[in-house]
Figure 1 (tube, rainbow, N blue to C red):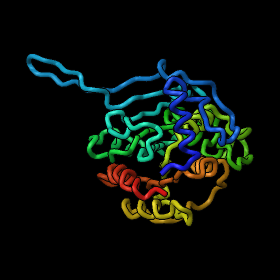
Figure 2 (cartoon, one colour):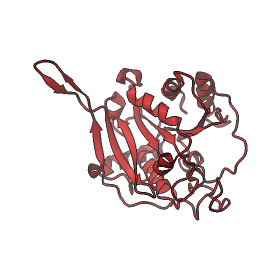
Figure 3 (tube, rainbow, N blue to C red):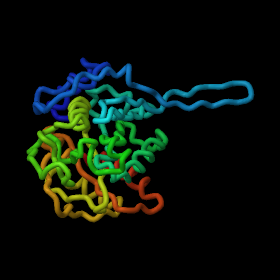
Length: 290
């Protein structure tokens, strides 16, 4: 499933190891603003469970590994979670069967429905996740916006107009689409650019709200999007209005052309079980990846 370019990046990851997230990027990546190297051992935690009887207490192996990939304007950690209890997490980075899946729950801080999907993916049994999937979950790239329940980051920048692909100055401070003073000017954007460049996911799903749709595609990922729409009941249609430059998913697709990245627009409300439906759909479309 991986091209020669992605295979070379995987080898690079093997050399860099897990000690450094930032600064280990493929030579083909854009020269976007980069953050300083992130030392994982100082910002990593594991989650495990404990079982006990009247006579014994046994701590089970960790189910997930949480790592901070950077900090927000106000100093909040931007955390990513890897499910380490699944077979895919133990595959070698150059294994051609390994499929790296990244799910981003929140970009705009007042669009938090994606967190429900993240919660379902964290709660799934290992047997419910395909054996070749290495699953990474990024609850929010905008923790300040989530805390304030506002669209922008603490600098009042729309992070989904701040990514370094066809970035353009949109409006001015105070406008709902203000794109910031320059491409990747925000620490949250820089952290995600570095992390995606490091991880090189085969597929990334970026959650938004409230259009209840998924944009169609005539490219190689068209069948993936159509299958996702069928599995979730989302209409295939574009998002109306707005100026769409500096968009995260577009930056990823255009920078790493053999990666699949698309936006899912959830509705203003969710029916019971809808978040689980989306979680299952993400895993179900993996075999369709180009």
